[in-house]
Length: 499
Image (cartoon, rainbow, N blue to C red):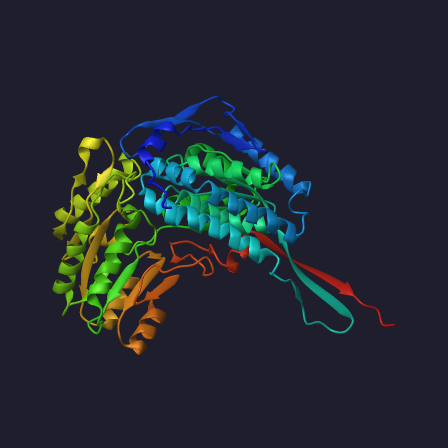
């Protein structure tokens, strides 16, 4: 028997928002008693009050995390025991999938169908995968002489600070939490003030799953208050940050000003999507680039916002991409059929509209979109926007927009395509579309990007690393490589006397 469709609007009316911090396994107000309004970009409604965490709250959260780590109540458990708790945590997330998806949609505007199918599912998958991985990561024995035994072991780094953005709040949190918790660390998470709700709920679910109090703490607040305090804290051993390159620079500065904590930044992108004249699947390429740049309202660091097309097919391909725009109409995020929702807030809305105006002013040709949408709702919506005739020097071709705006540029040959693609301070992802396997490998090797897709884009799994070259960051999230960020290598050298 089929279940009746969910009335998400009714669920939204009934939902209760608890914006208090989670420290030492308990909800509490900010030390100052201050709060800030959590506003939905869907229609401008105030969802509730969220505790405005600051330095005093970060101090309390770090102290709780340190006490939990030093007591070994989590780090001292066997990998198999930690695995069971994290598996239950993943199950709890799936059990609360509808609540979490609704919180995510109300908080940052993404379509409810995507929040359910992608965000909740990927969050649970990430935690379950690291749970399964932790008791399968073996230590090493170094090749020494017969009179010695040199053991190389991984140990939890201690207290991990995590600062995550607003575009994929749960997924980005899970990418930090999965390896950090599996390895035995304690975590203090600072979610974006634009989307704090699911992080707070995750912390409650973790305690329900059996994670000891103090191992996972959440302090919402503003970057210049809670975020800065966490990055400067002398008792935080490592910091994982996902966000803008501008703020990532500050994270490195804060590490230098404090205890030289290791900092891992996952930053911005301006990913290039290269389409060569020998590509036989131009329609699929056009559908793929549209689906990738318009997904999540373009609010993805790896969005393929620069499309480089061989000059012989550039006009036809531009028309193909523009023809896809009507398939992504901005609509009510609480409607299960919606494929493009709201921009996260009015500040980001104005940023995106400013870039669209810059594209016009600098002479790019607007093929689709280009305006605010659904103004009457009081929400933050932008039409899917396609520019052609873009030159590499234009702002829309060089700067990260973080909205549903794609720029099409021309190239004359392979060498020029690679040169334009690499002429960016970023190097997160790229894509190559060609039927020539030799060209595909040549270009993939030449592109300075952390991930290069060939004849597809954004196919993905937790098993592969995510991160970029240059100012797109350092280190990698996801895969077994993420353990490198949250563990220390220790050598234990034993001398063996001859019998």
